[in-house]
Image (cartoon, rainbow, N blue to C red; front, side, top):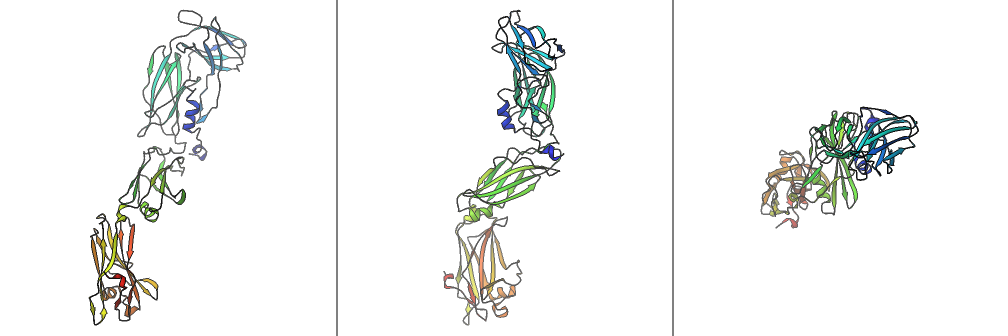
Length: 464
């Protein structure tokens, strides 16, 4: 799969729909006979089924090989040479270059049509004689792809201006078709072009079987469709989902994220994965830092990557989520010392410290106690913690309305960092609420002073 093929986009479908829908109709002709002219220009006569000349009928000559899209590229705005019949039903087409043409005739109401296929013009005058206008026919068709939503597809008949664009179900209609044989082309971005031979009968509807399109491995992957994002305001998690992309050499999806606060970009990040869903647990951190500011918006783009590293086009519009502080972390709580009655011989060696939870958060949230020692205001984690690393003194699961920590000299001894042995002269005790992914909101006591004997001297603000 060469890079040049991957960057060959032939045309954005939205622009193509606007450019072609008004005048293209999927058409192409396989007339069994080739009529050769012998003069300068092509002329002939059109009559109705009763043999009466038809005046005011339109006659168009399209190059027989013409198609609005060829080889993955638009063919530009090719125009047919056209004229009208006079009162005798006579028409004359001039200014034609040498080539093979399909001639289409239609009365003023387009209720009667005729196809004169594959006329070979050698820049010599030619009279095609009399042709009869008949009731037009209709083609009903449908495109589909395996395991995915049908793509927007151009369905056109070669050598004509007959064209249609499939709808969200893959169905399309080609009305008012002159009777004859056609080459019906199917073109959809990201899929290999396909062709069917179709016969249209006068006054009849031709119903085609569904046409299954195969991914074109020579192109860059399709952009994922159906991207949705929902915000779990309890846990602060964004859930993303999208439809799968069916590419033979698919490797992974790339999820791109950007945080925007008051229209100012803050952070850009990306992840990869092979599933068609993703949980963004990092949103909780952004919500905690910025959620009280307005407005914090997180934008997402999802792209597909193939085995050669080629990415699908980046969607013009991202999926956006407005982040707010998760309910878990809106819980109000206070931290205080409950008693100072444990003094012995004038030395306060036990502190009862309580975390009061005003409105208990979800039971999955942990309350984590932590201590940090200081010497002359120089911070350091206290010793080695037998319960956990980094000075963690204890963990409670389920967030009770009051969680109490009894902080003693033995607590410091167990951590290997008493004031008398190591020289700490103060300590911070803190508690934090932690969500399952590690997001936290914490609170600390005022500094607790230690003397040389390891006795506590808490701030008066700590008492109840």
